[in-house]
Image (cartoon, rainbow, N blue to C red; front, side, top):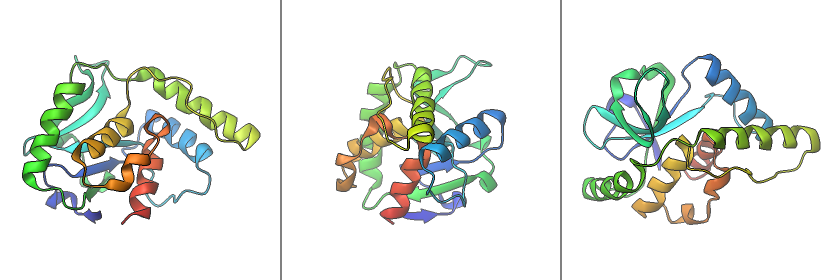
Length: 184
């Protein structure tokens, strides 16, 4: 896998965002507590997949201002400013494979609601790590958040064999980026 410019994104690419907000700051704090040795060059707190169509992204999202509440929300990519986005291309993901993977992924996850409670589990992990120095599993598993959804998309694509052993339950956006950096 390799980084690509947001302007050069293609269907099936994975992206990370670091859009400044109160929610971003809270997630970034929890991620840094859970992964104290992680790189801080890009404060990632969200992840998604480019596509399934040009001009759109698919992301796990819940919005109190709209009627969006899904592990696989398809929304316009115009909402992202390239200054706050890092884009990655999966090795050997053909256009046909990306389309087929999206078909499987959307069928499975569009009806599933966003895993809001999973965020509490990630905060729990961070607090326990800060207090004890020990890693614990996310105790809440009731759907998926953004990074977990991206993880399942990667598994469904089958193009990154090493990803089959990744623990999706404990996969937050920063850990996902750490894995991308390690395998680039």
